[in-house]
Length: 156
Image 1: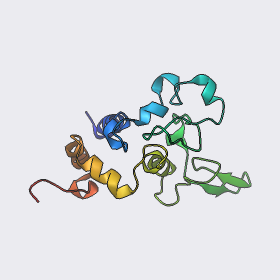
Image 2 (image 1 turned 180 degrees about the vertical axis):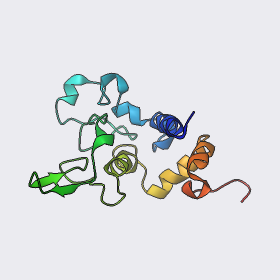
Image 3 (image 1 turned 90 degrees about the vertical axis):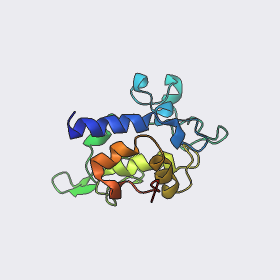
């Protein structure tokens, strides 16, 4: 398996890991189901602005889940002089421009896990800690090195 395939596999494992949500009861795939084009599971709701419940079932996101199959093809937000307009980023409200991480996709992916109304983590450090405790930590360390995966290491 080459590096790209390993990264894709790790992404898929994380996408289906319910242990990352606040109550350990919800995965990314709960709202972004592959069977529905990576939108929510109820087609009628997907055509509205209705959102699905988060890890805390009485809390709802401000938006319905959008398909993300196109997401990796969008560039960082930038001005295109030929069009005379801005191009790129993930959303119209500019919440994932890509300017901070040099990747609109990476910025968008941080949204749901860190939203108290969605997956519910209160802080990026909490999410990193949870991920550092999962079995796939060694896989991430092989891909990006130990410095790329922060969190406590047994025996250190």
